[in-house]
Image (tube, rainbow, N blue to C red):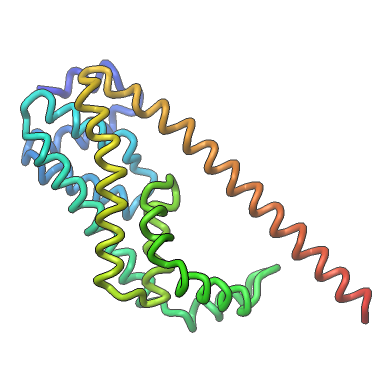
Length: 217
């Protein structure tokens, strides 16, 4: 049983304990379900679930190949659900929402759409390996109606790489699997900081352009 190791190692053993319970009850598919839900509800951290799946595999609860297969399948299922949400919302509704938002207009959405049409495959592939954006990238892919086959290929490849890093780390570290979360947490803070800086730059530039337009009148 790995629950007692989780209780000793994980400060958020509520989430970890829930994931472990799924894995102990139904094996590899339990890890897949946990990861699928993590895609749909980002507060569930893959940085906890994936190393735990590797730890469970190291203890023989299921095989390493099974851990990689089910966690990647879970990632794809969760991403596909978000893709269909984006497709259901559609570009027209997104443009309408943008028109009601301060500092944003429909032309911004059109530019994003054009960018996604050109770079969507790379965005989905690399987006699956970036905290926060791992789940979110599926929504604009759906809005842009990215060809489903292409979306699935790049989502699967990106998810497999990301999942393999964490599952294999948990497998190698064994009872010290929680160390993986610390490194991932530092990486996530860097990403959040970069996003905040980008948003700040966007707001400053947009306000400056608006003021210049008013002055020109």
